[in-house]
Length: 176
Image 1 (cartoon, rainbow, N blue to C red):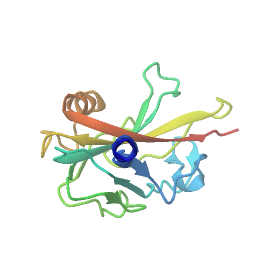
Image 2: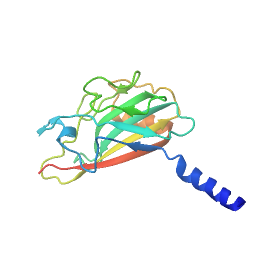
Image 3: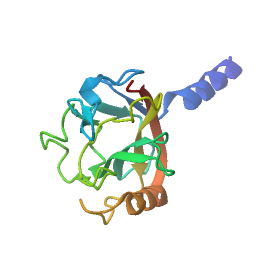
């Protein structure tokens, strides 16, 4: 009986507290709703709903990024970077970027489109399927010293220096 209790406890610890990112609006494939409206793309540029659970102990804030490693730049493409999301927050509403409804204190930093805010998928026509990596980071600091003009290298460095854990959703998109 004691062995059974120990095994159940170990299974609970192993699987019960996984930091998890989910979305009501993201699926395996992005849609015109998440496609950029510019750069030759004609999408609605709606930032997705994101929510997360089971943040690790010691989390003091969160960051969210969206990255396309398949962009033909040699270094990928940053589509969205948000830092300083308070620790008590566990969701971002759909279209929060355009509607300026991000959690109080959260800061959208510069994307590779050259502005702060959500910039949806816009792979070159005929370039094939691109992966879009949506990641939430649990950070060990209340605030990163960044602002809306901070570039992706600064943001990435600061996020990585303070990450406790992260969780990711990958969606795909192509234009023919």
